[in-house]
Amino acid sequence: MPELPEVETVRRDLHEHLVGRTIESVCLNRDDILLQTSADALAEALRGATVSSVDRRGKNLIIQLDRGPAVLINLGMTGQLFIADAEAKLADHTHLVAQLSDGNRLVFRDIRRFGHVELCADGQAGESCTLRKVGIDAMSEDFTAEALAEILRGRNAIIKSALLDQSRVAGLGNIYVCEALYRAGVSPLARCGQLTPEAIRRLHRAIRQVLRESIAAEGTTISDYVTGTGVPGGFQKRLRVYGREGERCRKRGCGRRIERIVQSNRSTFYCPGCQPDPAPGNNGVNAH
Image (cartoon, rainbow, N blue to C red; front, side, top):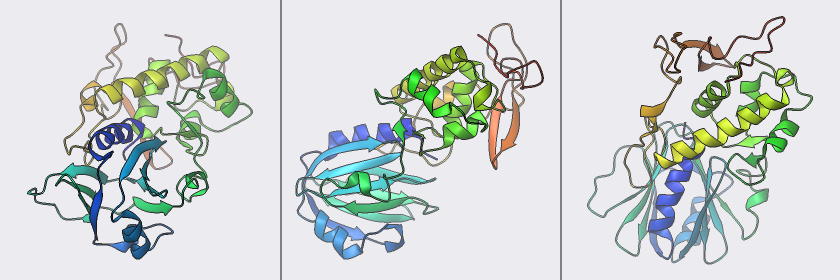
């Protein structure tokens, strides 16, 4: 599933190629990708409109139109949103194509159709179905170590589950939570209340660090993700635990093998040496 770095990469690419372009026509092949929006309303809003900005909140894209409305897009698990030239052959599962004034096309493709498109009125994005329950963005200035401590305070939830809750911290998914917990030396089995203030500060630092590095590498491509120009990301080459079950830990002096467990029907990858399991007398935190 595209997480914050992947969606931010798409946003940057689309901002470069869409802002100032006019949408000349719209072809919608499936209307079941629409959320609280009709096909006619979407086509009417898009045709003849000029894109004024492309923004992001959490895992959601916000395409602002000069007329006032905004188009909100969530890529779901397999969604792709990219620019294609007029001659490019479009693959199966292409659900929406917008013809642009420069001759290129904006393409939304989604094999599993868990993504969606929502049209919202001017200034109403925060009240939309897409965004109204989205929490603090993990790359915003408001997401400080103190904010993370407040989010975790008083909770008995497993730390990994807490970080995946988009209503609290927006943008994190399975890949980057695994990677951040490893860098912070925190067990994915630890509970929020077991983390010391120092561990929370390390975790906050690790979250921001891994997100910045992945954005610089244009995201992680495991299966379906492509950038806004239709090419794979590069951060998969730098993953330290995710997808590395059975391989040696890369931390100097460790050498333990990466293990995989299942939490809430999702695979969690971690190093038992660098991220000790919580147990009596052990808070599940290993200071690096």
